[in-house]
Length: 383
Image (cartoon, rainbow, N blue to C red):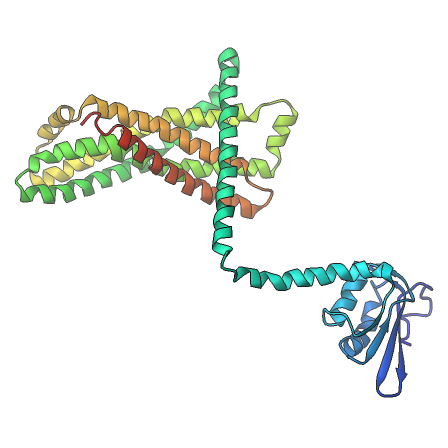
């Protein structure tokens, strides 16, 4: 019998008795309370005996004298036995459920690597991804419906309009983004002018660079470049803002005090981006034309006056309206996607990072898809 830790040990303290018999056989008997509280100070005393006799095939284990056993005691014995039942084990039926859980967890852990090798796994992942997409699409449609109801409520009660929130978001997503948009637009205009001018020079059609740059920048490049940059800049910011508010339970606090956060936080952002996105798209188109004009003058000798006089003549007004309409659509898409992923953030920092990344990727992808659809629908308009 192992010695107890002290003379004043309680009567129900856990104990481990080892009885030797001829033929190098041993019988281990457990008594007392093998629980978390009982083993708190005494498990070290049993460690050597458990390691020595745990996996020995000729050792018999008797658990019938145990007073109490919980999951902690069962886990200590299970690990000592090498995560399998000994050949000679006497255990009351009332204690078997502790080890049944451990044995079940072990079986499930061993089956996981096998399941990954199943040929159906790609199909399963594809199905899970499709179901996840449908779930997110359902939540996005529900959010859009909620915003439409909020908009109707604001139209009936004009005094509730979140004017300050809309103004602040227009400033952040529009005015503060003009610098980076101007830089990117100017460089894209220069690159496009040089590349197209080199090809046009071979056919003696240098003057048509005005037509090419005018339609490309006003109709496609300006709105698309502005949308991509705003999705990466403002879209990620919106997702992070809502995600942090979700982590800090600020959204729940607003709901508790009766403030509809969808009106104040989400609808205001959707309206702000729908207003600012056409303007920044037009700004990007104008700067891209300026960059293309300078490049055309340096590489092709096209005069500034000829370029500025030719753009209004070769670009029909319908292209400007298409560009502005694209800006509105892109702004709504970016705001909805950003708010959607912000509201899906779970209470941990890893989810916040994943949500921000997914927001940018999905927003840019959605903008490109929407641009392709609009280009096909209006392919004969303004050309």
